[in-house]
Length: 254
Image 1: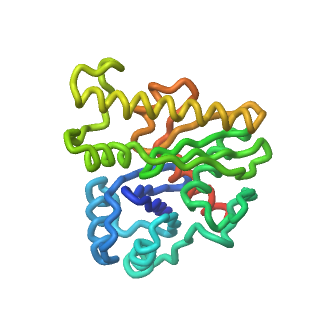
Image 2: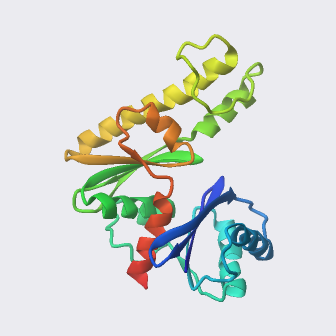
């Protein structure tokens, strides 16, 4: 089985593939101080919850935007799973030319998402990833990573309101009944949910214009279903897109 690990700033996605089929997936908090022993305990418990044999992993691939977490995840693979992990980074075969001015600046997760989207659609596409930051990544009709947009994530914006406005509370990110809020919580939720849907639609519209080609738009990340429902431009949501991209890249490097 192939273990895929996508380490984000807030959450870490973990997927287990058996002969190309995703048989289990989990999302855990990204803990910067966690050791490889603690990761081993956590992973074993997740395996047990799903009735999976330990260890049943024969290969692994890691994508991370948090350098401090990379070493313990790699050591987990080496010490407990007895596999040498493949790490997405410079020199790895992605099958996708990177047109960024400095390819090393592009987050590994953004490249992985782009690879997965183009493999699925084989046309120009835009991936909107709702993570700690909200990222928009453009792929050309030829399958080249063109570039993208980085905006503050929804949770960052909500936390900023809470911390910098003395009378505003911390709120859950859920859809309010109306755009015009009748109380402070509903007003904040309207600004966050409908405001981000509008932000996404405007950025996607401008990116599509620059791509100047029929473009497929896919959203991923934990809040993708919520915002996509309010969006006019997002055609599909796939919270597992990054994990599928990791599997594709692993196969291209095997």
